[in-house]
Length: 374
Ligand code: SAM
Ligand code: MD0
Ligand code: SF4
Image (cartoon, rainbow, N blue to C red; front, top):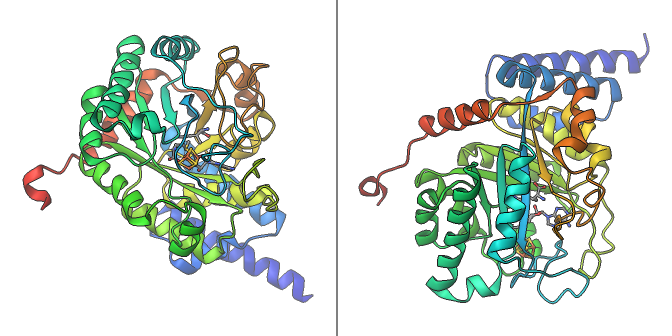
C-alpha cells in the first residue's frame, strides 16, 4: 500500500474521532481545532461539512433564521484598516437615515418575513460625540423600530458606554453585536488602530452580564495564523457568545488594505464548520455580505443556520463588506434567497421558533445582579 493511502486512512480515522467527540459534546482540544483548520483534502472536508450539517439538524432541524440588515448611518469616527467606512475614506458612500426613513425600511424588512432587524452604524460622531444626548437619540431610534415592528432587535453600533448598554433591553434590543475580528492582540491593534482591545472585549462581557445576548465575530484573511483562529475559538467559548461568526476579508477601495490579497473562500467555510462542531447549539451566520447570493449555498452547506445581511432594495441602503452587491436587484431579500434555501434542504423558521430559541438562551444565562458584580 502506498504512503498516500495510509495517510488518507489516518486522516479519515482522525476526523471520525474528532466528530465523535463533538457529537458526544466532549470539548475539542487545541490540537483537534488546529487540525481541522489545517484540512485541505477535499473528501475529508466534505465529510466535515456533512457532520456539521448533521449537528445543525440535531439542534435546529431544517430551520434557518433570517436577519434583516439596516445600516442606518455610514459615518464613522474610527479608522479600522480593513473597513470601507473608516473616517476620511472618500470612496465610501455616506448617509445618515432620518427616523422616518429608518422606520420605513424596518417595516419593509418586517413585511418580508425576517426574524430580526440588525440596526447597524459606524461610530457616528453625531452620536458618539454628542454625549448623553447622542446616545439618547440612538436609544430613541431603537424604541421606535421596536414599536413599529415588534421584532427582536440587534444593535451593532460599535463600543457603547456601559450606561447605554444598560438601557438597551428596555429600549427593545435583545442582542449586542461587536466583533473583535481577532484575539491576537498585536494583530487586533494593527486592524483596529484606535480602539483598545480590552475596552472592546469587555463591552461584550458587560453586555452579557446585563442580560443581553452577544455576537462575537472573526475576520479571516487579515494576516491571522491557525493558532490565532484556535485562540479565538476558545475566547468565544469563554465569552459564552450566543452567536458566532466568521467573514472573509474583502479588500476595500481607498483603505490601507486595498491591495491586501483576499483569502481563499474555503477558510471561512472551514471555520463555519468548526464553529458548528464546537458550538452546536449556537447561531452561526452565513453572511450575504461576503460573496453575496452566489456563495450562500456553500456557507449553509458548511453548517451555518442564520442568513444575515438581507437588505431591502430601493431604500438607498448599503452593506459593509460588499456595499452594493446583489442589493438593488433584490437578491438579498427573503424572496431572493428562497431558491438557495430550497436547494439546501432548509426552510425559514417560524417567528415562534426564533422566539423560543431566544427565550431558552436567555433563561440559560440570566443577568448577573448588580450586587454580585463588584
Ligand atoms: N461600526 C461598528 C463596529 O465596527 O463594530 C458596526 C459595524 S460592523 C457591522 C462592521 C463589521 O463588518 C466589522 O466588525 C467586520 O467584521 C465587518 N467588515 C468590515 N469591513 C470588512 C471587510 N473589508 N471585509 C469583511 N468584513 C468586513
Ligand atoms: C452582516 N453586513 O450580517 C452585516 C454586518 C453587523 N452585525 C452585521 C456585518 O453580514
Ligand atoms: Fe467604523 Fe466599524 Fe468600520 Fe471600524 S469597522 S471603521 S468602527 S464602521
